[in-house]
Length: 194
Length: 194
Image (cartoon, each protein chain N blue to C red):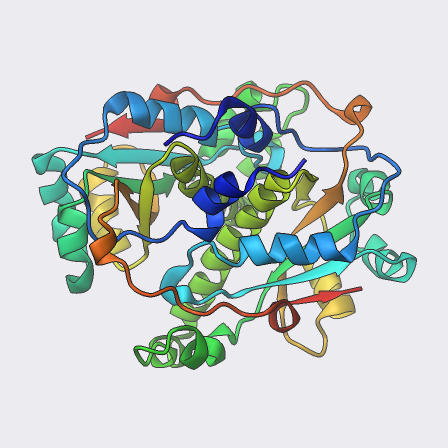
């Protein structure tokens, strides 16, 4: 059954990337709710390589600020929460727990190229699930790649070895900050039937 | 506003990866509906690098079969539709149309490493939007990476230069093919607050 029109609007048709924010906090319980949905999205061999840092404090934002592209600083520093979507290059150490019915750890542990592409692909999928889950729980998002990954990794992941992928500002968007929606490719430009 | 419980169930909590399929076709109009939702998901500079081949015919499936891992053949050959989620490495040639307010083409055209990571990251995000949009319109999905990308590229993209990323089986799932849901990492294992 197709979801009703207001739900499709909230998820896709009316949802927009926020560039300005209402003065309204996002409680930590909302972040837990968000995680408990996004974690259910499918990943290869249930590998679940994504890791998330939810930056809400002034101190956390200050650590992040220096890594941002100039044009992303204002909207990010005013966002109630910034999510660092990262992944754990050693995600496969969790596979005995996450995929107990096969020795999936061995598929990746000795194959660095496969492990790397799996972490990036599936960590990115989980970042998209975060965007969609945020919309599903009534939050607006502002995803972006315009930052220095190495600086973020040094500031946040020196201990864990996690690798930053992209950032997602989270909160309740202020519509005055919206740009007009840009065009999309038509079906015939981006897809074909075989 | 948070979507109602049945919608969250359909998108995340009850949604499962299908391994077997009801004998029920997916009309091409449904694929158009699916594309018209997924295309609206956000990408970096609206770059929209993903390209999609919807394989429905016996001839198309035969072209794909030889590239599949042994364990993925049965569920894929019986799926009403298999989507090849790919991306166009020359996605930036569309940016004058997709991102008309800046010369975004130049950010990528002379920077092969940035173009490649942008195509893979954002094409993957769009693959996740496809999964979520499919669930939103009542379809079940079976995403997978277990295939030979080079063989798929040769069979389907010799002319276009598109690169395959992952596959998504689409249809109406047969619950008898479901595996028990595997565990997920807890918030404390996969996330932290700062």
